Length: 528
Image (cartoon, rainbow, N blue to C red; front, side, top):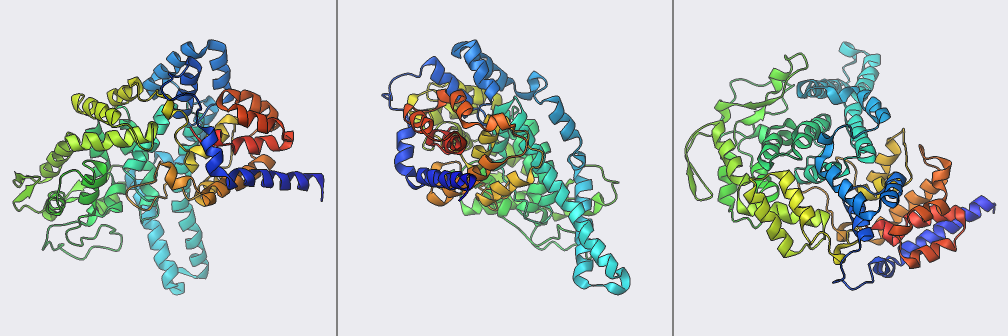
């Protein structure tokens, strides 16, 4: 066995030992000080850096050491709460790279046109119409389909990862992930693959620091959501289209569909225990009939324009009773009023506040914090900036029991590992492949509730084994990481403030060639 092979085998063995004893090892990673003991200034700074960003870069830790914990923390929190409104947040090279992604600037109409053309070509392939298209034409159709839709999804994923890795507005990027997960759509469903980047760009990102009602309305009207939860096809009972719609139509009427109405109340606003009934789901679905996508109109827009359309003929104009209130026929205004009611409902405030506290504080967040956030949400009219400020101003966020209490999801683990190595990856496909292999493909949560952010969803031997495998490959080679950044000894010194005495002692005894993988596989690094 060569020396290199021996080291690789040792690395696998060492990492397997970490994963195999994960329950006891992770127990050692938690703070040993009494939980009532306040965090020191240094601990507060490290806590903020690990919880409000996708992990530290070497420059962040150097600045923390240079400025001192208190001054650094004050500056960091102010910067994060300003977000991208505070000025340029991306390095020039990353901005140039983003500008080179040609599909991210396409309109909803242009994106749907590409999807429709891909469907047309797929039908040609399936029919095998050699007489009309020619054998060579079928091959060209297959190639064109790959060129039409796959680059759209790939570029959407690339821009998401580039921003998450390099943006100085790290809290904003974490909130983008939080809200996309809350209003989840699945790229594997029909035209959503072509529209998911537009959805994130137009319905989520602009409203991160706005009001919840704005984001709720934007997601409700975006074609990605209308297609994903089938409201584009939902019509009043008995509705008959004037004529058979063409093959390009992907929003063909199929009767009343309750999917979006149900998830709108259960997941997006009130919560499963929000005080509504099945009858309320049906009535809300009736109120939202006619909220659809102008598919045929998109084909004549020369690649411009949004696609939401209220189609009066599809709307149920009958009388309704929803959440104990009578609803008269008012067309689109019925749905807009329903969104107003849901956005300002106390149950919505509590549901959202629990989710925010769970994402940023603890898997089982303190009831007092949830109540505090709920009051802030209602008092501010759903002002999301004020709501997040309440979170960061709460004593609960800074309690010792929540220090390193959150287990990283695969997405967070990958990003934090790349950031600490100051990675500059040029090819995102291996990273996207690693996320898919770990069970968290980007834009790949099939169910409307999105991905879980609690330890029970990700902390198991199989999931840890996936991380072990990725770390082993990372230790051998990773594109965009300077050789010096892969030296475990140097990184061990840099990350010393984040590691326990036990972990530092164990790693210091290992060969330098193994320290990087072992360090990034350590219990402290698995937590945030």
